[in-house]
Amino acid sequence: MSISIQQISYIHPDKEVLFSDLNFAISKGQKLGLVGNNGCGKSTLLQIIAGQLSPSSGVIVRPDDLYYIPQHFGQYDSLTIAQALQIERKQQALHAILAGDVSNENFTILNDDWNIEERSIAALDLWGLGQFTLSYPMNLLSGGEKTRVFLAGMDIHHPSVILMDEPTNHLDSSGRQRLYDWVEKYRSTLLVVSHDRTLLNLLPEICELEKHQINYYGGNYEFYKEQKTLMQEALQQRIEEKEKALRIARKVARETAERRDKQNVRGEKSNIKKGVPRIVLNALQGKSEKSTSKLTGVHQEKAEKLTDERNQLRGSLSPTAALKTDFNSSSLHTGKILVTAKEINFSYHSNSINNNILTNDEINSSDTGYHPNPNSNDIQENSISKQQLWQAPVSFQLKSGDRLRIEGANGSGKTTLLKLITGQLQPQEGTLTRTDFSYVYLNQEYSIIDDRNSILEQAYAFNSRNLPEHEIKIILNRYLFPASEWDKSCRKLSGGEKMRLAFCCLMISNNTPDMFILDEPTNNLDIQSIEIITATIKNYAGTVIAISHDNYFIQEIGVEQCILLS
Image (cartoon, rainbow, N blue to C red; front, side):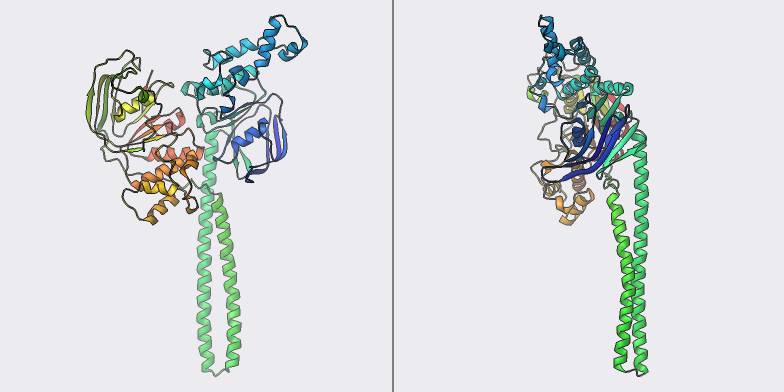
C-alpha cells in the first residue's frame, strides 16, 4: 500500500467541517484522478496527504519520498529554483567537496548523489526551462514556468508517489502535451486533482470526493462521466416515481376525507329523520370524526413519508444536471462575412498606438463583456514599424456561424489578434475589413461580472428590458442563486459561480450576441461548471472564437477552424 488514510477529518478554523471520517487508500503503482465540485476539499486532502496540513483527526500512512506539486506557488517566490526543488544543500555540498572540503557532513548531505547538478539541469531542459540556471529566482518566472519547475522535480527526485494539484492550470499547449506524454509513460503511484479532461482520460481510474466520502470508478474520465450520467438518470426516474406516488397518495387522502364527510352528512340527516335523540347523535358524530381523523392521518402520514423520500433523492441529484441555457439565434444569417484579414501584422513600435495596450494580456479590464455593433470600417495602413509581432502576416476570413480557435504559445499575440478582430486595435500592415456584429467576451476571470456588485445588483445591471422583479428572481433561482445568496458579493464567487451568473445576466438582458469570444474560459472552473459552459456554447447558434489550451473543450464545442500564430 503506497498511501493509506483512515478516519481523516478536517475542520476549518471557523468550525466548518470540510470532511469527516474519510477513508482512502492507493495501492503501489496505481494511477488515480480525483474529481469533485469546487470547495469539496480536494486540494485540502492533497495537502494533508503531502504533510502540508495536519488533519483534525485520523491516521495517514505515506512514503518518505512522496513528491507534491501544488496548485499555487506564491510561497516559493522568495526562493531560487534549487531551493524550491530542495536540492540546494546537495548542490552546496557537492561544490564544497569539489573545492576540497571533504568533511563527513558534506558527504552525508550529498549521499552519493554525484550527478545531482547535471540531472537537475537536464530535467529543467526537458521541461522547456533550459534557459534558466538553478540559482534563478522563482518570483521572476511565469505561472507556467513555475509549474514546469516542479514537474522537472519529478525527474530529479524519482519519487515512488507523486501528488499533482491542477498541474495544467498555467501550462500552454506544448507544456500540456509534454505532461500528457509523461503521465502515459509513468509507472509508479500517481494521484492527480484536475479539471483537465484530456489528462483525466489518461488515468486508468477516477475517484470522486462527494458528501464526505470517496467513490471509486473503474475507468477513465469518459467512463466516470457515463456512469455519473446513468446514476443521475436513474435518480431522476426514482424522483419522478416518488412524485407520482405522492400525487396519488394526496389524491386518495383528499378523496377519502371528502367521501367520509359526505357519508357523515347523509348519516346525520337520516338519523335526524328517524328521530334519534341529540345526545346519541353527538356521540355518533364524535365517533365518526375520530374514525375520519384516524383514516386521514394514515394517508397524510404516507404522503409525508413520500415527501421526505423524494426530498432526500432530490438532495442527491446534481443541481447543475438540469441547468440549461438556450440563447436565441443570432440576428445574422449563417455564412455572412464578418471579418476579412489579408496579410495583416502588428507592431509594438507604432507611434499611433499606446504600448501599454499592446502588452496587455487581457482585453481591457474595464470591458463589461457585451458589445453592440462596432462601426463597419476598412483598415489599411502601411507599416512604419521596426518589429512585427508575427513572423508571417496573418490572413483569414470569418463568417457568421464559424467556430474558430486562435492558437499559439504564450506571448504569440493571441489577445492582440482578438483586439484587431473586435476593432480595439488596427493593423499596421495589410488590410482588415469588418462588418457590423455584437459580441460577448468571456475570459477566465469572467470580467463581465462587476466584483463591486452583489449578485442581485449584478442581475439588475443587465435588466435593460425592465423585467419585473419577480421575473429576475425566477431567472436567478433557475441559475442556482437562491434568495439566501442574493446579497453575496460577486467578489466572493468562485469561477463556476461567476460563469453561471454571467449566463444568467445575458438571459436577463435577452441580448443574444452575434459572437462569443472565449479567452481561456475553463481555467478556473470545476468539471461540472465546464460541462455547463460546454453545453451552452455547443447549443449556441452563432459565431465562436476561442483561445483555450483545453483541447477537450475545443473539440466538444465543435471548433472547425484554427489560426496558429508564431
